[in-house]
Image (cartoon, rainbow, N blue to C red; front, side, top):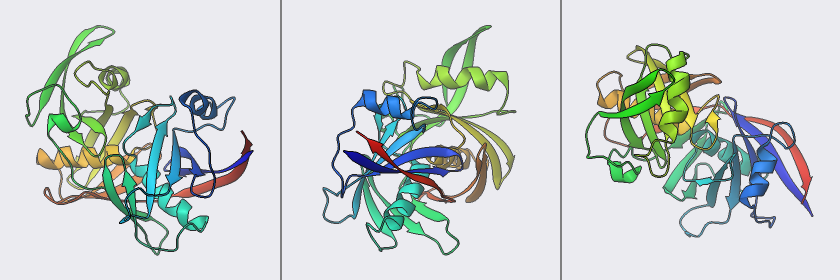
Length: 278
């Protein structure tokens, strides 16, 4: 059969998006890994699946698979692409739409300027929500083995539907950050691994951010990572309620007042459509 798909990206965080409302196919982890290969496959950070909802109060079910074939709970840049995709292929004309994920329901709205606003829900700081094997605190410390010995990493931990740890650093492009990313992602205290974010605060309304994503490595942008970074920075008193987050692929605007839901706004690009023999 021929499987139709669309290649999209949000600030360079790129996706293969597949409609499984009007098509029928089952993706195996090994096939996802083949497709994600940038030399021998289509190439992407995540595969996004559109499915009919199991909850009658929402419009679609949203599933996410990392490049390594593992299924994950949430992807913010993917959520924006999801919203544009279901409109572009005329699966719905509703705006906003409600989407069911494995970590809860999110709301997506396409703005007049083409950007997509996503209500990402609450930032959850309980270690059990990540999960993270630690007693609840505002700041955590773990020992991380680096090339020149052990390093004490201090970070905040928060769930945005998927797990994040976030550190403040002087330079997001330093060799220290390059080493810490994969070491924190697979740290034993995170039984389901973690997305490791590194933020460089520029002022109370702007930061630079890099994220080593669970199952994908360094990506050009991470929407949930930007939300997590602002939530941790706000909790620590470092930023105000609206923050421009500069990622390697571009900028997102994140709003959080410290209590309500986290709101993310950013652009989406549809790269090409294709058909795959499966």
